[in-house]
Length: 356
Ligand SMILES: *Cc1c(COP(=O)(O)O)cnc(C)c1O
Image (tube, rainbow, N blue to C red; front, side, top):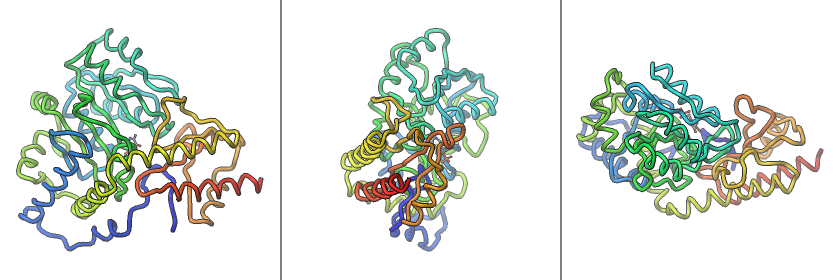
């Protein structure tokens, strides 16, 4: 058994991989529409929402673009504390929006107080928040941040990227008042890449109707018209929908609470191991990701040599992302990964430490 401890694409269960190879059918057939409706319905439970789920034939970044194109006419505040949050800001600027940044050092979290100050200074149509910043292993306090938006600027839409956490960490979309919550298939959902899921609130959809220049491929108003008929304007990524149908059943068979507890326990194990071996975690206590641990490379390990060693045992970890390459390394524990897999990885890493 081989395991990739990387933050996506993660390992996919053999039966889920196999589900993709079912024969194609016309996407405008009753059979496919029934499946498309079923996957959207089931996904609502995963998002803790009663509203709607879009199933986009794109990776998560496509939904970042959809959020900007549909819910922002002009002004957006991008909360930036790492590379993926920065990407969302880049997406906003590339789409011609006036995007201000609320930025903190990589490794830090966005705090409710900072956000309160920023929202008091200027009114924004929307705010973008990355729940779990994969480049640093920092989990932003999304519940508290949503509460601040509600308190200071209740009409500001809350757009949340949960690409590397949804399905591994509980995020209650409706209870938190999130207007747009997006994720990708290839991380905690343990599906192959190429599918993005997003929940959108009613008030966000109403706003979208008034936003001009939404484009076509990511026009959620157009997609909503088709969604109401259990379809999409374009040809959907059918093999991934087949896989999603099965994978959601597997996820609910495990139980969401069990799944969240498993993810929390796995990342805790990695954190404890790193600290016991004299290394620091990038994220401060209280803001540590439950799906990916970013460790400061205190011992100046050659991460690619470490990975070569791990690969002889069928495992691999990830180097630091972007600017943090070689300064940190990352151990992701997402999707199908078990506590026993984590034990095997940490045993191998301990052997590598002993080897010197
Ligand atoms: C991986 C990742 C993305 C990019 O997702 P794609 O599916 O590769 O487009 C965006 N945000 C976060 C937090 C991520 O971890």
